[in-house]
Length: 151
Image (tube, rainbow, N blue to C red; front, side, top):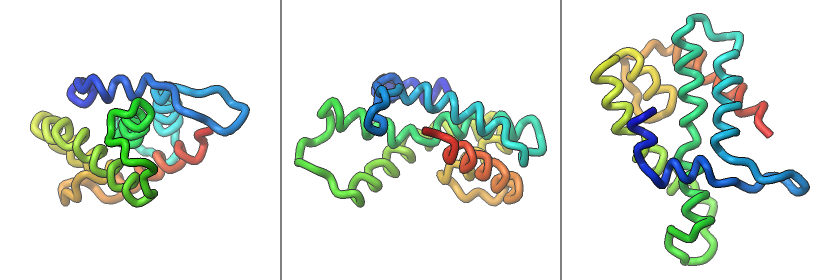
């Protein structure tokens, strides 16, 4: 987490309020990510304590590319070429997601190979055969459940 959030722009993105449905106040991504992490860690299908911790971390960071892109767009730090197409937005989000997570996950794999491989696969950064596919599926189910419960 420390390596991921060493980027000042990403920290700002997590602290920059984002729009919500009409009539609701803006909310900080940090708050949304903390809620998602809590919900993911309590998912009943997780069998082991370390799965709960990995689910919480994954839920907290899985939207980093999205929040970074939203912040860049809102503060006009990205090219002002008008409205982006949905495809270009998805492409920018995916590229940012990978750019932010690749190196911290590589460092995690160096110090904790199994955890790093599992988390990388859960987040869609790597398709490492070292990770247990059933464990990855359980953690991804926890992320999906947490996402479904978000406002």
